[in-house]
Image 1 (cartoon, rainbow, N blue to C red):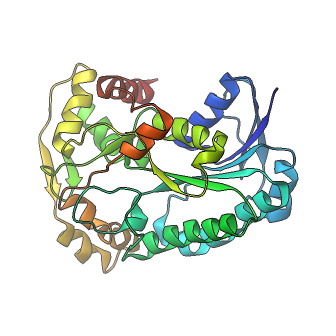
Image 2: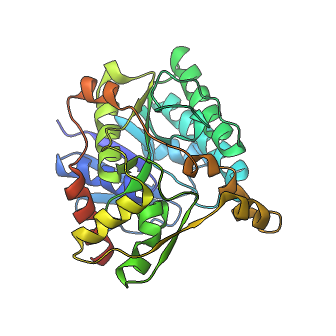
Length: 309
């Protein structure tokens, strides 16, 4: 039986999720403020402000699931943009009965001393992580009260097609493909986890479908960690290009610049991710859902293909 799904956001995860759902024959509505056509076959596009709970509810009526794939890019605006948007998404799910599937991230954990896994508390120290943790806590409280059904998937730094400025590797990749040196945040020699955006979408859809998966977070299946320098070299190799010099931008410099540049200050608050190992333990999701990450070589090829397409 054909089912309807509503995807809020047309970034890399939203597009991949919509494509997966459409490819299996379901009806898919992608909601963005502009209503811009993503070009995905069989997907309907609606333009509305998703923080308008009444408008979002109207679109979500009859849907099996409502996917939060929104990703406000300007960290300086998160405190203004996220609360009403998250509230409207919860409200629409409560009113319609649609499963509320959330694309999360690792920020809620804050600085950790080992691999991140679902058993860790959300103990963020910066306001972005605290905000994301509160969003999940509010959704989980509504789930436990019986007002809605929800699940959140959390991926590491994104790689894969369409990632662009949403990923630290893809942010510097265009420069590296021209054979020029690049600058990465923090240290370039620390192990770091990278999650394919397609795998985020795959787990998001699978978790929404699976009632046994609801009411908790899941770490997205992710390949073995690489350093920033290794990850970039692997993607360049997939493109048939040589490695390039990789320079490091100390987090202290970002903090100093942040005194006058708000966005630099926001990035500096996340500097702990780039000064020590920052890796995930995805064994719970692998065991429950029965799949692992897309092979790393394929991820690298798709990352290049997505940039040059």
